[in-house]
Amino acid sequence: MKNKITCYIEAEFWYGDLPEPFQGIGGGESELWDKALDIAARSVVQKSVYAFRHQENMTKAMIVWMSMVLIGSRESTLPEDMIYSVLGILELEDYKAHYEIGFKEARLAVFESLKETILPMTLCTDWGFNPVPGDNDSALPRIQGSEPTLGIDMLECTALAMFDRKVGTTIHSRKERFRVWKDPQRRQTRDLGVMRTTLRSMTSRLMILYCASLFDNPSYLHIPISRIPDEDVHVLIIDGSRMTDKEYSSVDFKYDCQVTFIELGKCMHHALFADPQDEMLMHHNAVLALECVDTTPGYLANKGTALILNASMLSGDITASVIQ
Image (cartoon, rainbow, N blue to C red; front, side, top):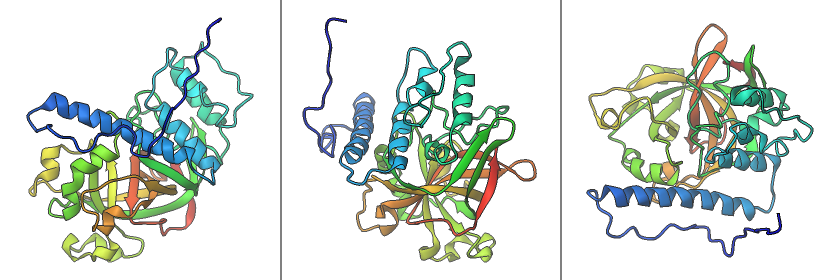
């Protein structure tokens, strides 16, 4: 090529291109509102990229995390290039890329080749999970058609992991059992729309739930949630496909279950919630985890990324968990 084009950023700002405030956008102007949400989503990306570029003490976890999050919101002419484009960052510089095997095989083969120190840095970069059984890959980011976890920066990876399509993803990390519920009466629930705007991809539908550890307090499983002390309640942000917005807001629709969380690392979120006095939501450090359910004895299935706010780490011991 004779002509070369160089792209550069003329100026960067932490607030990205988010206009402030969104004036003249009402509930009836749906097209303008959708446009505003798109602008907010792009701003979240820019805030994460800005923080990443100006990070003084860059770690490998931060580099891998940001790279995997960003490819989740992009497209490529050949689907295989979605995963092949980050081979160098994943320390697979000598990996031989194959284009005749299809995207599904290319994705699984790359994840099978990752070191146990690198694979966990790629997990939880997708809010959702692969709902199609058969490849034992529910813990892996989908890459194509994913919902990237924007607005979150990995600070420290605390797990080791290996993937084998015959076995699944074996993760050496802390595991803990929680009681998870929804509570439309809590003040944090009212910030759902703000949270979705500031911690969203273009397509993700997130949800605020609440949780309390059954490891520290087994009695919390059976008592009314109103009796669980606030200091033991954590705000939980997860994929919202499990219920409709109407069900989420309804006092009559109950959601109360036991969930296993597998810790992957410590992170920081860029949420901008409506009430700066609410310490449960404004605490920017959080635990990044996989939300898992029991399947066959000894095995778990991933149900998506979980962001446990106002927490630093899980309480359980480091054990080996197999997620299929």
